[in-house]
Image 1 (cartoon, rainbow, N blue to C red):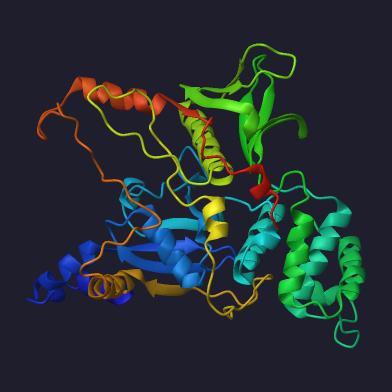
Image 2: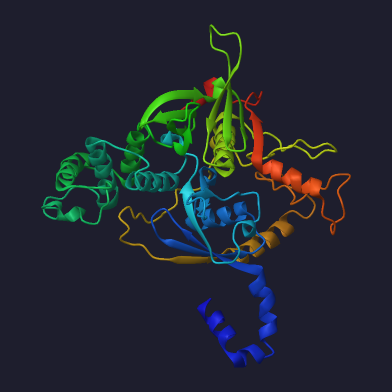
Amino acid sequence: MPGESTKAADPAAATSPSTPKKKPTNSKAALAKVTLLDGSILEVTIDRKCRGRDLLNSVCAGLNILEKDYFGLTYHTANDPRAWLDLERPVTKFFRSDPWDLAFEVKFYPPEPAQLQEDITRYHLCLQVRNDILEGRLPCSFVTHALLGSYLVQSELGDYDPAEMKDRSYLKEFKIAPNQTPELLDKVIDLHKTHKSQTPAEAELHYLENAKKLAMYGVDLHPAKDSEGVDIMLGVCASGLLVYRDKLRINRFAWPKILKISYKRNNFYIKIRPGEFEQYESTIGFKLENHRAAKKLWKACVEHHTFFRLMTPEPQQKSSLFPRLGSKYRYSGRTHYETRKTPVERPAPDFKRSLTGKRLSSRSMDALAQQEKERAAAKDANKDANKRHTMSHPPDHIPDLDSPTRGSRSPIKKDKKERSSLEGEYETTSPNVVPAQVNKLN
């Protein structure tokens, strides 16, 4: 696009008759700069009116990833350095202008990486775990750092070769730990020697099989305070809600034990089932920094519970004459159960691995042109049939029966919107829960 911006800056070009014809194209397309898990940049040209899910689908298409339900897009704001993009809303709701700067990340960490259907998905999960380790989100012991690092080396370089790998200098490109030492690299070399004949895919699977055992694997942490005002961390993961104090886990609330999740202003609440010798339900409250932090935690719980615990997402709450106050947010993508039940029917794709970042380069793709091709193909193939889409997109606005005209402003409506952002609740007691025996299937 540099050529286009140069033309726009030229006064002669501005007066030429061809310039007005280009304006509709420029206003329709937007540029998203997506930082991938290997550190490279993917530039995506896409419809400015696209939703977050359209952009995520385009990124996954560019990476040749079919198991895309585990991934998401993050962006940073003045209040949150790592906010998740809402996939059901237009991207322009979160960016005033383009380019849109985002990052492609794993959002839902599979408890059993071996159950992923493709090596390319496991490779990107490896990159995410490596980044979590380097950024301090996934603490490891010295031995674990060395073991995981040795699998990365095996995947990238293959078998240990005494002639080519005489000293630790062959590991200079690898970032294995936040503060790696010569002693750690020596241990990595010793372990690398034991991985003879492992293919890159096998080494990455061994990497993930060891990483999944780490206490903080796949845990999304949120700072909070308990009822006594003590600083704690609340962690959301596939199995439930975890409570940490001074980096030690002091409590765990599994999803089956939780009846309701809610927040009101900066307070977050969970309603717990009565224990074996208890008669009544109990509610536990936590205080967060502000209502945005409380809502972010609540949404993370709603999403993780739906994705890992339910067979299909709960239906969206319909608008009514007397709507309920509070956030109506529900996760509407495919669940873990649905993803695993959807077979991937294609030959294993070829792809380049870059666990060291040596081969990093920026790429670009025109998702807008690709969407036009797919739309034209879909029209030809489905003129008389309506296909049921896996991911449905709710309309931007469902008017109430008594909604005011577009030009009027209603203080009642404004108050409802304000209340909506300050509170919300989610019942976890659904008949749609994945059967226990299904969770145990390999």
